[in-house]
Structure formats: C-alpha cells, structure tokens
Image (cartoon, rainbow over all chains, first blue to last red; front, side):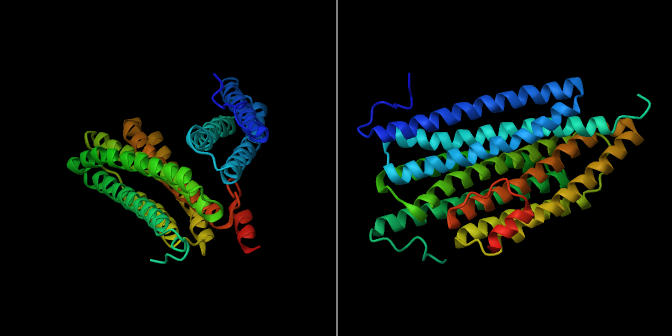
Length: 124
Length: 237
C-alpha cells in the first residue's frame, strides 16, 4: 500500500512533493542501515579506516534530516493538509529524528572503535 | 508572562489554544525537572521510596506527551497556521519529544539508584556527580525558561555550558576507570555509576537540542548539528 497516497491529490504538484519526501526518507533509511553495518564491521575488525568513514558519512545523514524536515514544514505551510496527509508529514518529521538518533549511535560505535584501538597496549 | 507572540490572533480561541499548549509544555517540563531532582535524591540518599516514585511517575510524562502531541496535530489541521504559529507547533512536537527522553533518563537514574543501594560498598563520592547534575538541571531549566518567554536571547550561553558538562563527564569516567583497575570488586558498582553519569550527560544534550528547536521556532533556521562556535557565529549574524 502506498501510504503516501501520492497519486490521489487534485494537485499533481502536491503528489510530486509527497513522492519526493517519500524517496528522501527511504534513501535516508538505507544510509542509516549502512552506517550501522559499517560501524559494527569497523568495531569487530578493528578497522580505523572504516570507523573514520562512518564519522565522515554522518554529516550526510544530518543533512538529509534537515532537508526532509524543511520540506515537510514547507508542505504543511503551503498545502495546509489535514487528516491522513498531515499525520503522514508529522510522522515523517518524527521518523527522521529517530533515524538521526540511530545514525548517532553508529557514530558512537565508530568513536569507541577508534578510542579502543588508540588505547591498546603497545605490545599487543 | 509575555503573550505578545501568541496572543495577537483575531480568533480569541486560537490564542487560548496556543497558550494552553504552552502551559501544558511548561507543566510537562516542570514534572521532568522534578523527576531529575528526585532521581538524584534517590541516588545520593539511597531512599528507595523516592526511586520507586520516580519510576511510577514516568507514566504521567508519557501521557502528557501524547496529549500535547494530539492537541498540536489537531490545531495544525483545524487552524492551518503558517509562519511563526506553525513553527511554534512543530517546535512543541520536538520539545515534548526531548522532554520525554529526559524523563526516561531520570527513570533510568532511579533504577540505577535501586541497584546501587542493594550493592555492597557505599564509598562513593557524590560531590562531582551532584555538581554535574546541577549543571544539566540548570541548562534544562534555562531552556524551558526561554521557551516560556519565547525568546532566544542568550541561548548560546545555555548550549555553551554543555562543554563544561562534557569535561566533567570525561573526568568522572576517568576516575571510575581508575577505581575499576585498582580493585575489580569495584567494577559492578562503578559501571552503575558510569551509566548514571552518562544519563546526566545525555540530559545536557537534550537541553541543547531544545535550544536548537527554539532557534528554529524564532528564526526559522535549522541550526542542528552546528558546533558551538558556528552556532555563536550564526546568532551574531
């Protein structure tokens, strides 16, 4: 089921806006999953390079969050949706917040990986 | 209380709705502050009744969050607000989410207080922990005060205090690690203390997030993920 109802509005432009938000959330979700996988791999293999990559990529997720939230606020202001569309947009804002928190945990795992490697005794 | 930002609508009812939402957020904030205070009392005095009370009262915070959440959504749907009003309502949704998480952290501290009290060897020095708690409670209080006044004057002073919180956090962690290395019998207890300081550190972070939401509300700019220096620069410009 397409929750975004992206082909049901009289305004085709509104459909496009919701579709774009849906795509962005989906991309952000993929990125966050990759970050978790990468962070765990960095930790288990002790790879500082991978950990650094996780840290670098966290910025992209922050940018996604800001962009999606901005788009949602704009759509609410301009389209004044009610009912399902409004609940959907507010849910999106909450979900981007959760995804960002999850990504921050991946960043935390990467941080710990780097710290742990730096604090290993020299003779091991 | 200064109502100039929310009491200018032609619809008296809309003014009332917004004011009612603000008051509810402040009530929720007050409850959360009280929960932190009580959880620290439970921790330092070992008073289990207080700890149990904190755990029991967390439901009230969750209920308030859901209530305010539903009211905000309803107002957005019915009033179709724009500009500041819309940002205010979206900000309330974010702020109550932060408050709910702080409430969970207070509950976490209360649970740790119970574990710590049932555990041998109460030779903890709570002095530094209490100082850190005071710092984050001040940050949260100032953030809620800014929300009450709907202003962001001096907001970077609040977020700036997080650096000191982080320094104290690192210092307490170092001491706990030293204690664990001195005597392995300290490990269980030190780990519980470690979770406690971490909960306090997270409360400071959430106070900062509230400040960032307030900047969005007043200026319409998304300032999340900036460093303190970048934030200060932005607020000057």
